[in-house]
Image 1 (tube, rainbow, N blue to C red):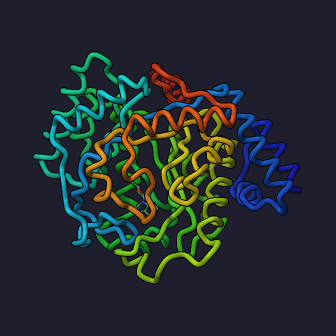
Image 2 (cartoon, protein in one colour):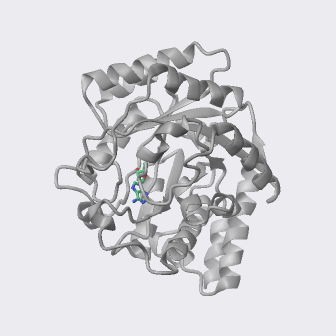
Length: 366
Ligand code: 5AD
């Protein structure tokens, strides 16, 4: 039965949630190998052996939210809060442009005050003046439609806002009461309305999360008609309520990593022409080849850090975040080498827009 459903997926037939759940749990290693091969095969059919790179700038860790899993949650008093200076932020974006990365991803803790909206707009204007201007992706949380529109107008074209889990009960278990799944979904709708290439994703291996829940997440991505997906394993953070019960038992992290790779593969087969990131959390669990394993499971995007190393220790969303003291240039050199080892090539000086976005626009008659 597994292989029948896999064939259906490869042929592009519609899979219901039950079938997606079956695909997420291959019966043996051979079947799992076939899943990865099918997903990477489809990735190569759609994008060749090219991987899109995005330079990541974590420009502020100030956060108004108190998510139970996250190391930069509001009530974690152990982190020193920062906002990079305008010059530091623009320098990161300039590096991304000079390195030939398709875009710069500006990520921060969640704030929705007026000064923050002004700051992000100013950053966008300044990046717009660069000689090698990269495309701009924002990852700055839930905002009003007016703010999303304003930032779009100022030059941002992509936006990442993870749903974290599309299951109502899991979402509620890992967030404080004032942070709701309904509000998150509504924010994703506003992003699409504002015309962004829209991305989302979930954490994998959360307490109480079943294969059926994860199948529900993939179905959610499909229903929301998303253009980009970024997801990775949940990693306990010692200074958070969800990390308090202590670090993972031996083998657990690797299990979450494997489950994450299966999620990437099945998401590729179900959603097809979207961009899928091999995220940093994969690398946190397997520093040598986590992200490369993500590419071999069907992902086509990697987001190397281009921000100043001085800030990295205060942006520990989870323990074991890699490349804490590595500068942007050595990260780039290493990545070119490790991609070559799996037969993949970085795609330099191209935006790498997700083809799905253009299909979505054409369907809407835009
Ligand atoms: N483990 C894994 N991912 C995490 N994130 C935050 N905390 C953790 C954690 N402990 C992810 C969330 C968030 C993204 C920026 O980082 O999905 O959206």
